[in-house]
Image (cartoon, rainbow, N blue to C red):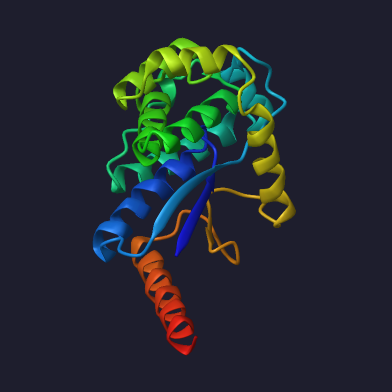
Length: 215
């Protein structure tokens, strides 16, 4: 069973969703499940170099609603061990380069770890994950070859592929993240509870086993 998780690196619900997914995989054991992270840019119009986060959030939500949303997210985050530190975040970055790094991490065999690293660096450490220096540090933390990563970041490597994957998700009808796509057929949207994900894994793996036996 292939499980594609469509997410954005600046989406707090995606971070919560990943923690819950990790819990679900631990509960289930993960046998028979291939996990792949897919890109989705919540706002591709943010320029290279990013924008001031406080101004951006107030323009998007309004000052009071931004605070209310932040408080709600912090509560859900605490329940899964995330210490959201929105007060540390100075820039809202364009996430294209972070998605490129996640794609390369897949080739290096550390994609799931890289997703964790980027979420933590942005939401808990307040780092600018649009910065090449920060992305190279994240690559080093995951054990990737930083010379190769630095070279690829300087070029346009895989930018078009990321944009195509983002467009494909939208063509599938995905409008919000995180979204869990199973075998390119079934889609579950939102930061699902671990128990819900385990039920989905068991149901679909059983269905696959039945189909395989029938053939």
